[in-house]
Length: 192
Image (cartoon, rainbow, N blue to C red):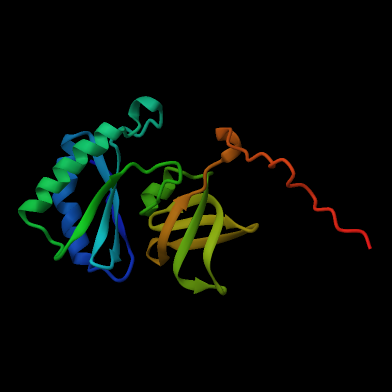
């Protein structure tokens, strides 16, 4: 049917509650031709933000299969209705349904495998070699192990080591190369 989502946790959200959300919403999203990529919970003062990332079940990657605003709206209505019946989250929160966007979050090894050859930023749960934040090219995925080329060296990461990850867009290929601002060149010093 789709990939098994995993979850990012901010401020130690109970994994059972988040898994309960996905188990409730995944079948309803599948009926809409969508899949639940993963869920983020961000606790806040007076409530929190529950963000559900969705994607098309057809991963062709072209404009015809991209998640639209209408898809997000339909998914939001379905998810909201399901959570209203038996809400696993106590208290107030805001539900946000989002497409993966240009900096697509990666929630599991299977999602990394779809983007072998692309660059990604990864934040580890615990430091490795003194670093928690890595940036590199995804070179291989074997089961739950992700191989990345980071600073010219191969690193093998277990899916469970990753706190969060997202793709790094190729801004040149997208035509969004920043242009220098006028007058922002080398600063001229005052003569003495």
